[in-house]
Length: 169
Image 1: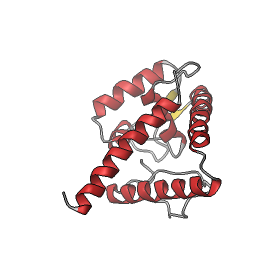
Image 2 (image 1 turned 135 degrees about the vertical axis):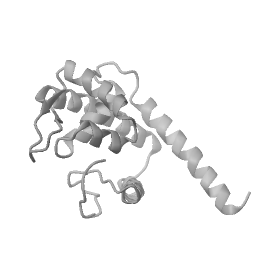
Image 3 (image 1 turned 90 degrees about the vertical axis):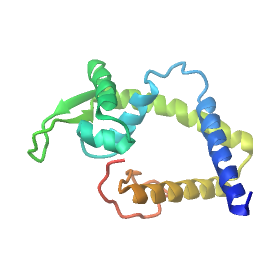
């Protein structure tokens, strides 16, 4: 195996472990009311303008039928609402309801507590943590540019000042 192949193999393994550690850090879903798909969709809808089912499907690289099922469940539970296209288009768009945003923030608080626990157990300094966050942002933004989609980061302190494009991811 070449050095580059070994680095990529190491990266793949470490990203898989990071994903596992992050999910495990949240602990049991006690107190959380959203399933994973609702959490991710609400996070995206909170970050920008209302989106159509097609735009959401493109954002998450899934079939429209998959997004339709997820959004339908969220509509039924009062987490999102269907609105006319503000630009006058024919397709309906979706945006989070106040209840959806309230439940998202409650679950996000639990998620942040898990992330805080991870950082605390590593003993990482603020500087090391900030470097890690900056690298993750840079990595994600590079992927977003490649896909032609961006994710609004709401002016986070570590945001690299990337110009916003069409915010679909």
